[in-house]
Image 1 (cartoon, rainbow, N blue to C red):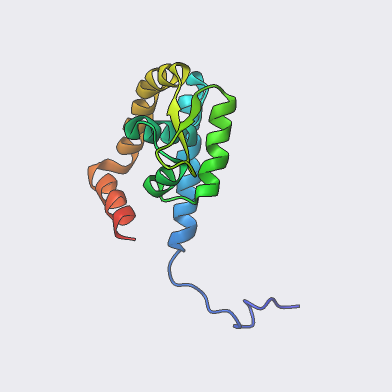
Image 2 (cartoon, rainbow, N blue to C red):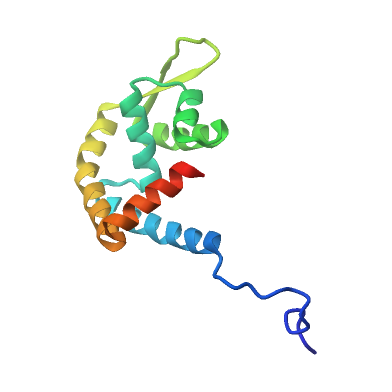
Length: 144
């Protein structure tokens, strides 16, 4: 029995799917950063979230979600993991309806240990992409 593709029901794509290629690259890149950050005891998602918290001071979960361009519920789940790990603590927010968070001393120390590991991963990605490729990736992320 011939498949639907063989029967011509689905047209053949003339180019490889950019979405699939970007998703595969994203998974491999995440794995590279996670492996690099493993000695600090965190992954790239935790590192990124902690850096946003560090830069913002004592942001609310809503503010972090806005900065990260993620759903607030996703941020809430990820922050709870950091709270349980002792890397982040909940604090009072200006708006009583909100929860704010701040790095703990352990969280700040973890970021200090993780920063050079993250920098090494950055250099590996930049070397693989080349200067023009790195700029094209940044431009793509900003344009979509």
